[in-house]
Amino acid sequence: MTTNLKLALAAALLLAGSVWVWADSVSRGDRFQRGRKLLPNLMIDEVAAIAVTEGGKTTTLERAESGFTIAEAHDYPAKNEAVNRLLRDLVEIGLEKEIGSGEDLARELEIEPPTESTVDLTLRNGSGQDMVRLRLGKTFTDGAGRYVRRTDQQAAPIYLTSEGVFLATSMDELLDKEIVDELPSEVVRVEGGDFVLAAPEEGGVPALVGVPAGRQEKRSETARLRSVLERLSFDRVYLADDPEVQGLEFEPRLRIALADDTSYSLSLAKRDERSFLAIRGDHAIGQVMITLTTPEDELREKADQLTRAEEIGKFNEFHASWVYEIPSATASKLELTKADLVE
Image (tube, rainbow, N blue to C red):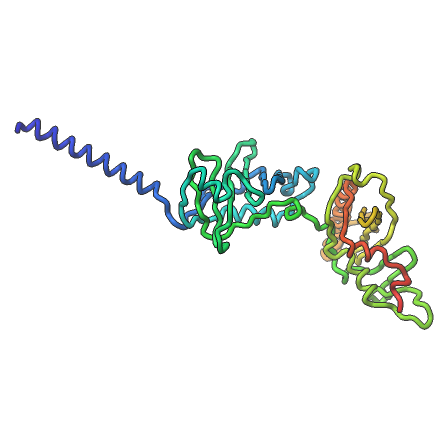
């Protein structure tokens, strides 16, 4: 064998060996690794819109200036904690094993076609481009995992997740339902249709004014009145001009004053067994005067007053556009009369 032939043979063997090594490394790189994340490169700060569909109902979250809003609720704010939890849960989805593909398998695992419990999720960036599309199917028998497939990748396999995946998908779960939250200890006065709760001049808990002779204040009921603004929430929300709330006759029910010279006025309307709330804020903060000799403590106090007055202005600007359907337990507080407050 000539030297040239030997060299050519050696080169061919080396080439074949290198091709085999490259192919083996690629094959090993494509092999499933237990515990790896479904979305390892997801940049949640770039998510500008989230569309979630379950049972034929879609909730669309869109990033706004101060958080996400819900398109199907006329762009009412979503609860930031719920949206952050949804994104965090997506990032943390780990994979237990690769299941496979095929129409029969997809049907059995409720991936394709979708069922009432199948969840479709799409994330889009600020340009409206899809970042991620995936589908969650059936939950594993003992709830320890759930079947999932990326629908933005061709011929993507179905995986079983390492743990159960239960995402907040409904508008009810994602809406920011809290209207206002003020502690009862901050309440200094409550004015109803035929009663007043007022705090003593020396301070303390507001008490019922003008208790009839031989009667006493029913403290359990006056405590309910002082707690009206604590985590005040709604069941459903409507634009003020929505046909669903047209013709409602709102009656002023309560004015609740706080220690910081602000107050809230609550009006109630009824339709059949449903109760609706309109709310506005007010403040008694007058012109704030500041001089070069104003003490630092007083400056801070005045700054807090101005900030609070601004908050009330923004509160009214926002809530004037909405009517809230509230739980019957909340409505019952607004319907209390003086007769309910004595025993």
